[in-house]
Length: 522
Image 1: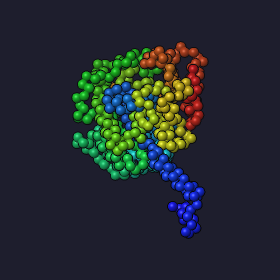
Image 2: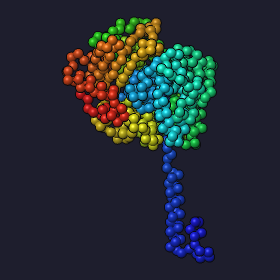
Image 3: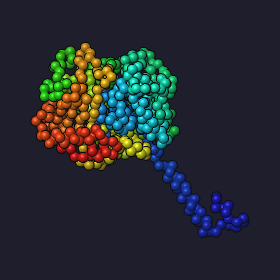
Image 4: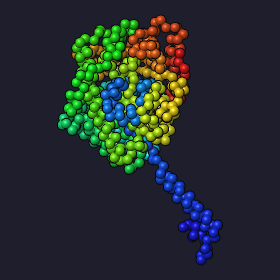
């Protein structure tokens, strides 16, 4: 022992010194024992689907049992921009699109090239966690037009990375190559696609084992098993299911044979009284058949995602890491399946497009509970950072969901009172390439808008290319399906207050956004 060496030779230690030394030794051993039994920092797995309706969670049995039944369901979760690339950047950066400036899927103002051009990849959820000692991995879809967009659509003076580029912050990288309008490089093909596997481009063909969701499941399970004893890990798992074209795994091709798309009151509803861009004819029998066929195929695709979740849970149990792992399941935005005569479309401010599926399970989170609080996709990055013990940068707009997820949540009146939704149409081509006219779907030119949503109201301001404007206002308490536009007859002072709040939110940043969201809205 150290104390023995400081005693003069041949002299026994004094009783008082010996008692003190023994006490110190026991204290040290107790401290070491306590440290060894403290739980390690939690792991986090975030599963991010593409174009998934919030209601379709009910079609996933493993998710219902293992996440909804064992965690918290947040039914009032919304996307800040109902379009893939802006929404995914908002998730990774915790920002509204007006702050991260990626406004579309491509063109000079959108896609991966825009984010790369801004240099904003240098600070994201991935870099925050990796800097704190986490092993980080992305598997699946990153951003539209990764790693390069079509020639002529990139930001002015853009110099993109090499095809095998791996963004900062990722310890392991398995990102889908996505070149718009190039079927040889499409992440939406469930077969015959390419993955940048840690800097090496892998091509997957048309064999049964190449089915995209199953490949991701194998990669994810392998990562969990390898990472279980190597410190905390963060996995962003982003299958493109159930995005079109809807191609289910062959083993699920006969599932849900009689399933139809939901028929809420907004299905095929007359748009009279709404903004003029929604002047659409009634859905035909062929339209409705196409909607049902698509919904059924997308539901079948989600069965493979549900199996992926089951495989991950098995791996977590086998490695003894389940109790110390947060699992978050969500999507980038919703999807119209006939509501307001819209289908094969997102982009709108309406519930079908902006409401997210969101379920969270993990240490300290209650089981089988529902939280009605307003939640945004910008909240996920600061929430995961908080679980990891990391303070996000001051410019983050979102907030940690910890007060909502604890056993006794913050009251609704003490939480966010409004959320902003914002959308900009593409300027390079005038429309998003995913939404060009098809056999059963006309071109629907969704105009630029900003919208404020509360638990009881939806207020929308449209701005058309010719400079004209229109408004919509819905009483969600009495009209949850957004059928009756009250804007024309609404009180002038009310409309002015809502317009001022929308303008302030679209100009906010960081703590200012949270303060504005917390304000009571008329």
